[in-house]
Image 1 (cartoon, rainbow, N blue to C red):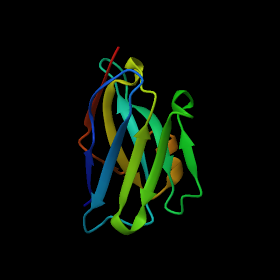
Image 2 (cartoon, rainbow, N blue to C red):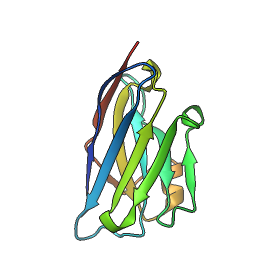
Image 3 (cartoon, rainbow, N blue to C red):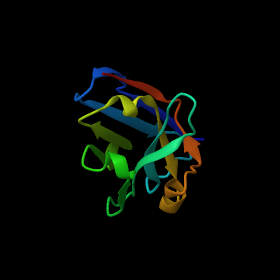
Image 4 (cartoon, one colour):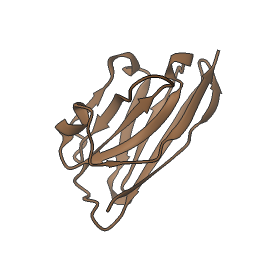
Length: 124
């Protein structure tokens, strides 16, 4: 059983920044898990945003967040972060943290464990 708890969402004006955090815990969480972020806008399907491997050697982003979002992780605390800069209204969505033993699974849109999500709203 794995628990993923997100925090850091909120309301921000276009051009602003937010930093999301996700702390992983639970008896079955593996520190070597890949972790990542997905988002779901109203009326849309959930989509991949970013992923990072345990070693941090593999990092991937959705094309339209490259250069604006940065994913990072702190392995001793089992926490990942998503620094989001230059936000625009199209970034408005519920952001979900995800974890999976296989990095590739995150890239294909799946994950063994999901957080409850945190709302990010960007006003124009």
